[in-house]
Length: 634
Ligand code: PRX
Image (cartoon, rainbow, N blue to C red; front, side):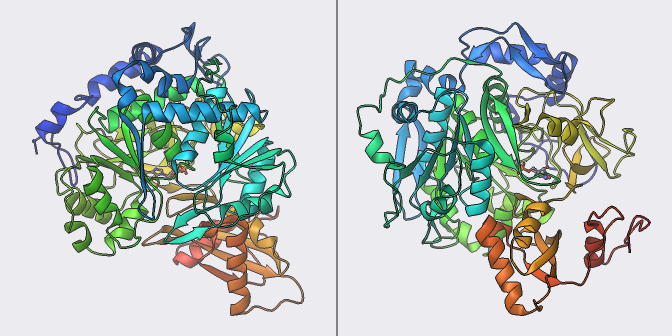
């Protein structure tokens, strides 16, 4: 460890060899350059690292802010940069994806092979009537075909809308309908903890009630009997064996600002919203951030242990690693199956060099003690990463000591579905403080401010804001541009700042410490859920008249959901009903959304205009001051 500038608190300084190896050895220098000339900074990166069918006329168009445009006038396709261009270089023969299934089966796709599969499936989608601008919903387990389906959509200019495989019927149905998808790509089942999650069965229930859907493509993964509806449903392997599956399918020429995908995420109110990302800016942003933050080099085996169904997987399993020509590892199942050393054994087996995961997973594996990781040779690891929720210093230190053997710096990356890529993060060359997200990525100006937008004093809590636009930023909410403006840009409209919805502190060294959400979003095991969605799942049960949910801190899962229900006449509170309601939410939304407790109440605290004051419920549970009660109706 070197002795850098004296900083406050507990600081881990990077070793000289890590700084030497880093793409960005001097954060301040690069950040200053970027902030001084944002279009110049991103324009140079974009020109030097990607192939464009046609160059841009303008790097950043902010005339119609917050509807920012990047690389205006350029023609590109992200898949051209993730696959097509590698066919002309030695990267063609390199492993793009190394996959291990939960039962232990394993597959390797070179860039050539992946391109072959993607091209074939792209022409299958075209044959099913999918064209540029159409939506395709993908609902699958963590298997290579999920990645193939996403890339095939992007190749033909269709937008994918991936629904996390842990969601169930209602959540899937809402997303199919809202996106007006033409095709659903799914699989018979997914392996999890030695069991089969019956995805096709869940999909069948949803599709039976979905309006616009024309075809379903089903990948055979788990092999059990599933119901296939004639004319509507097709086996993936049957379609891929037909002459229509053309490995020479052309890549659609897209505008840099054309939509690449939508991804639903929970917001403050109502149903999840479809965040829209585009081909050009997202391509540049995701790959540059991955390259710099995880210092990706040709020899790395990169393992982002997230699910492709979330933004982390979209950006850092599917797109960014392929654009960089890197090798990714992907694992299908549970970290503890069949034993709690499954992850550590695979790191040793495949020689993984970088592991990127969520604090909840680290805490979960920590519970089993250090003897499990100790049995394996983890010396291939050189960097670690964390995402999804604040990492508590205890978990940080365990990760650093037991997994990283005190050699591997931990990159804590703060970002969101909306931001598309890392926004607040450490770089390998920067001193680290356990639990701090460190600083804004070069060019990303972040601050912590009060109600008026003035910076709060050092170490005091305030609103996290982002003051500069960035290439991979969301462009809108699909089908609801007003809500886009209202949700993210209205709080500090005058200043033109983006509001992520998190609170944070900034310390003496300018390091950012994320505290948590300021809205009704709950992070359960790093998964983002809205109180409104869980409440609407509860009131869809015949016994429930009204419901309110809050998130309360939990050692393992970050937060858990606590639900309060007012019952309809004729229903009595009981333990049995409480279990039934929890299961009902599980069935409607998926197991991750199940409340940990359901309490029955006579009334809920509300404002005079009838809004539930969840803050009061939470203060009561936490034994805290209930604050200003003047707006309380009763
Ligand atoms: O509250 C922040 C938290 O996750 C939210 C975004 O959730 P989602 O869109 O699902 O994306 C998660 C993966 C990028 C943020 O508003 N969050 C994410 N990363 C961190 C975090 N909180 C603290 N530290 C992080 N590193």
